[in-house]
Amino acid sequence: MNLETIQKIISLLFSVGLIVAGVGYAYGQFKKGGRTVDSDNQKAQDGALKTNTETLELLTKNIEALQQSKVSQDKQIESLRTEIQELKKSIEEKDKKLTEYISIMQGKDPKLEQAAIAMITFISKSELFMDGINRKVEEMLSNTNKLVGAMQHTVIK
Image (cartoon, rainbow, N blue to C red; front, side, top):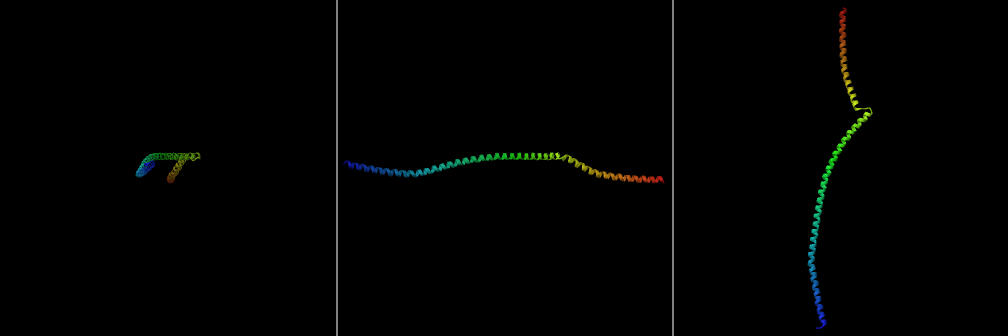
């Protein structure tokens, strides 16, 4: 055997080895590739599930915080409503006093007006009473005059 034939045999064996190795490698990659895709899908699904779970937990915490904030704000609103009612009452009282002071400054003292009304009422009632007394006195005087006239008439005869 000469050197050239040995080279051709070695070259042929090397080529066949490379082809077998290439086919084996390709076959292995093909088999492994399917599992890798499944594994990658599983990893992606696991990652998505983990992300969704974390998002859900975060949203749940946010909802709880918002609910607590709402309760706190509701208490603040109620407190402010109460304060507003108290301020309205205070303003109404001050408006009444201001109106009264303005009336006093203008010479229209409400107490003085009430006293004047009471006096007018008393006078009008007294007037009726006095008219009644006046009629009774006039009637008595008339009766007295008649009696005196009758007595004079009796004495003169």
